[in-house]
Structure formats: C-alpha cells, structure tokens
Image (cartoon, rainbow over the protein chains, first blue to last red):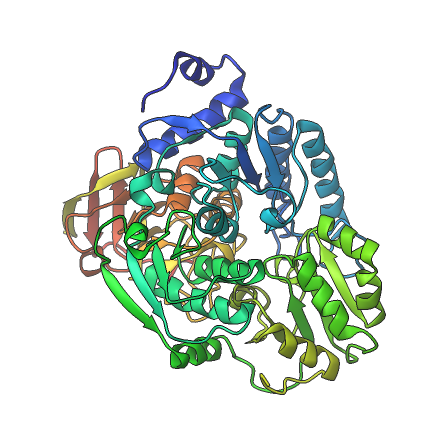
Length: 416
Length: 146
C-alpha cells in the first residue's frame, strides 16, 4: 500500500505505540482487502462497550484485559476533523433493577463513557446514529460499526462506509484515515442482483421482511429494488437492519431513492444483473412465518425499536397506549437513543408510555442485555433473529400495531 | 503412515497454525452464533451447533453479519477458545479484521473444493505466509472439541 512519509513515521512510532498499532491494523486490513491507499475519513461510529459475560463465566482477567483495551483507546483524542459517535452498550446507564444490569459492569462502562467524552467522542450509545445527529453527507467517507447503520449510510444517504469492527473504527477516529476498498470505490457500489417487488409493503415491518428475504439471497452482494415506492425513514431503517441480519449486505439501491440510482441502468452501472429475483405476497408471508417460532399465544415480552426507535415511532406508540395498560406479566420495551428519549420526555410521551406500564430503554436493548423471556413479540426482524439464539426466546415478528395489541392483551391474537 | 495432502492456497492473514479441522459448507456469524466464553456455536439450527471452535482449523464458506465479529473473536482469544486458523471460500472483511487483530492465520482460494477435500477431524497445518495447507488423515481423531 502507498503510504505518505507522515504515515510511515506513525508506523515507526512517531506518535507512540498505540497509534502505531492502530495504523498497522488499518494498513494490514487494507492490504488484505486490496486497498492501495489510505483516504481521509471525517466520520466514525465506534463500539466502546464492556461485554456482559460475567454471568456466563468469563474470567475476570479476560474482562479486565478487554476493558483496559477500551481505556487505552479512550486515552487518545479523536482526530480534530472527525465526528465520532458511539454504538450501543450491553447495559443501560439508567437505573434498571434487573440482574442483567450488572453493577460492576455498569461502573466500568461509566468510567469508559466518561473517558470517551473527554477524548472527543459523542456518546450517543445508539445503533441508529443517523437519527440523533450523525447524518453524513452524500460522498462523505465514514468508518461505521453497526451493519444496519452501514447499509443506511450507503444506501439512503449516499455516504460511503464499509462494515467496520471496533478496532478499525477506533483507529479511524484517532488517525482520521481508512483503507480504500469495497463500497468506498465507485466500481464496488453497483448493483449485482435485481429484486422486483410485487408485494404490497404496508408498514415498516413489511420492509423488514423484504430485507430479510433479500439478505439471504444477496449474501455479500448489492441488491437493487425495483417497483417499490419511496420508504419512510422508519421503513428504510427496517429494510437496512434486516438486510444486514440475514446477509452480509453493505449497500442496496432503490431506483429513484438511493442518491446514485436515478434509474435502473444507473443502479447497475450499465452492467447486467447476475440474478433476478421476484418478491411476491407469498414470499412476504413465508418470510414472516420463518421468524414465528411461538408454540402458544401467551406473551411475556414486547420489543419495539430495533434499530432504536425514532421520535415519530415513540409518538405513535404513546398515542396508541394513552389510557390503556400493558397486561400483567408482560414487559413492553421501547428501545431508543438517549437523545430521542430526552425529546420524548419533554413532549410528555415518556410519561404516557410509563403510565401504561411500558419503558423506554436507552443505550442498549433487551437482547443485547440478554434479559430472558419465554415468548417475545417484536416489530424488528433483526431483533427476532438474534433473540432466538441469544435469549432462547420463542419469537413472533409483527407490525407495531399488532405488537402493541399483544402488549395490552398479553396474548398473540394475529396480525389483524 | 498417515495420509498426507499438500495444497496451495492464498494467504489472507499471514502466520502459521495447526489443529483439527472443523468443516461445514455454511456461513457463520460470530455475533449471536458463537459464545466467546465456551467457544461453542450457539446458533439455532446451525450445522455446527454445539461444536467448540477452540483450537480448531475452521473450514467454512465465510463469516457473516455483524460488526461485532472482531470483538467476539477478541474475547474468545482472551478466553483461549478462538479458532487456530480460518480456511474460507469468501473473505468477509470483518473476519479478516478480527484475524489480523488477534493474529489468527487465514487462507482462501484453496486449489481444491475445501468441503470435498477436508473432513472434520483431519489434522491441518495452515501456513498462510507460504500459502500452503497440509492435511493429515489417520492422526488420532479429536474427540469433538471439548
């Protein structure tokens, strides 16, 4: 890889051993992925979370070594030109009386959060940074963790980021550069398969179904959706998350929506798609059924806000819950970034949701925390997919209205 | 005499490691499908469900999914239950990053179909720096990775 004299000096330790290691990670990673140079990066979204492995028997030494790695990262300032936001945690920094909000873990996480703020990170603690102020501009080169947010940045905003891991995103934050490969380059942003959408997409969760169906087929490819209307932001959020769950998709095109796809031809860059797929009403139903593993009707958890809920979603939930009560024995979680909840607090929405017996959970989500439940209803395909393995729950994925009905009645009574 | 097969491959992440092979023509997400404390695959219905990755040469199509892949690999490495090496058909950028950070050799583009050539329990020496894979059969079989 071509390096500047300054970059070679950093590798040799001119800015200390930690930055030398960070640059070595970026250079080695770039070489493996075929990058020929490092390019300037002004925008990162990093993971700074303390893992919740105490209950699962991890050694104290492992946890301390990992935490010390995070502390070391936060001892170095974010590059002055870089906006650096922070991904979700495995705990909430609010007071929450569940065993999964382990006090020792919360203490270490608070310490790292404080160090991160001093280093220049914006501690958003969210999987949807684009909802709370990190909205990159078309063409802006980013280094984002959180695969669903990566898909959103590339496909809806026209920014450019490959899927990053914690080490590469931290290195990019401190050094302000990333290796140039993958969807950072024009030739790797063209569509590879065409998905003709013949099903009617009625609400955000239907868009999640389209994403979950397509991700399985697309793998690491770039789907082009043809024949769909413009999604709302909440619908786009579900599509992005589901694509990155069942597949390794970094980007898609919607003709007329994705900044680089004014036409079908432009989306494919003049090439012929290697595959054509049709998404029918039957595919829509089958996709829902594939994530409905419940063997009974009784429900004990309802999760809304995967990825983190928007203010509009919280507002709709609050309107639906006004004057109603969540059924006994059911936990209703609405996951959101703290910034979004602050707005919901000021609007009186949090009070309505809490009066109904629900809770807005900040910084994390119940699956990340591994709060156990037996039978879960959620409006997010990503949440349903991961909850199965991570919490062992039976899952039902359904639109927000049906989720709230289940919360109030304590039973799954079907979609309509 | 054990049967021995030497194959060319493309080194992705340099280094040399050896261990008993764990083979599945499948993708695997380290996030949510691998427990970094036990090193076992916890993904429901995954072909490797219940198997331990600790010290194994992991022969799979590719890793998939989450940006937490390098973190899970890092925690597994700290717990001493990370795989010894990766033999992948497709290189997922997040597994490559995790392999670089944790010094786990990775190869791809094996000159033969890995799923027809390598069996679970074969003893495999991966020299990613030289681009060579040595497969030995009839060595004492691993009991299943416990």
